[in-house]
Length: 473
Image 1: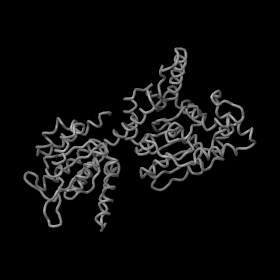
Image 2: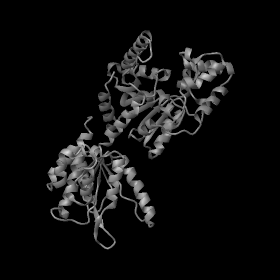
Image 3: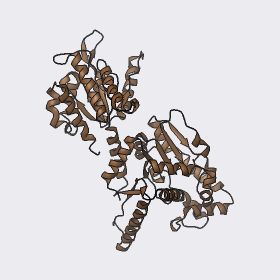
Image 4: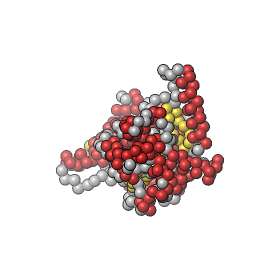
């Protein structure tokens, strides 16, 4: 058994390192209205005189159904009717497909993972045939391995005893690819019962090859509770749970227990929040410089801010704000080129706003959506300055900066306004003081954010606040 804190620490690290994977079972799809394996077979089993609740080998039940019918027609029809329909994505699918995970395995026939990736604007490379394994989709963001087939091709779906016996012939290399991923990646098994013969075979083969050097993987399961159970029933189910836990641990899978299935969503959101907390959006613009904040000093702040964030392991996103965008980029690039093996994309994301949109309403609409996309992938937003020229050349507040603040609040970002730079940043700091939940993060640093003009002290404070959201490490 793994504690929740240990699981979060190791899985979040795997995501940040690019070594995380997901294995989704029917439980992930159930909240969207899809049936699991047992419920798919229930009416078919009744037709041949079996009670599915009394059966332990569901592959054999499916085989009996096929044998009785003389062909797969009735099974294929059931798969099409059960899964080929429109349903809403559930929260767990949405969070999992928003995370920067590149590898998804599933035994499900539905397309919720593909739909979730599409909604998150991620390009999925779906593998459901062995011939597809040697091809790589251009500009892919994630690979989805559907090792038991897809609802659009029910005749090829893996379900009966024969299907499993012939799996290596029908789907050559799928087990080998999965073994490779189990060796090199940290998996989260979600919605999975571990009754699938294919997975059991692969896990045992991996353990046989690696012995005690197997990698740790994780699975979220609901703990047995006394509730209305008799003492005898509770004791039996508790013993079952402990035996399963020991067996899965032998195969390298550590169980994280929850008291209620709804806790899974909270855990996934906690993972997303922590992962996004490694990405910082620097918002602001400056066309006017006043008092202690000369143009040179403003550029120094922007440069050192991004430079030190990169040095501390953060990923910086810039919208190329007027007056500070170049300094943000230069500061980041200098640190990346010095110590990050020139892996620019891993540490710096440039999101200049779309230009040449003549219609002002259309521009406002597109820019708002653009800002929402940016802040969806950043857990921290730092605000500096925030002024611009109006059509007459006069200084005004940068309304885009204020809009980014409003969106950051909606996205539950950690907001760090450097109010001493004035303008919208100062306005944001004053507004945060009225929000008890948001203000608590910066309360012990508010004097520095509000008054300090020393660049190094400001950056030290920003890093201290930002690290609160990364405390899980």
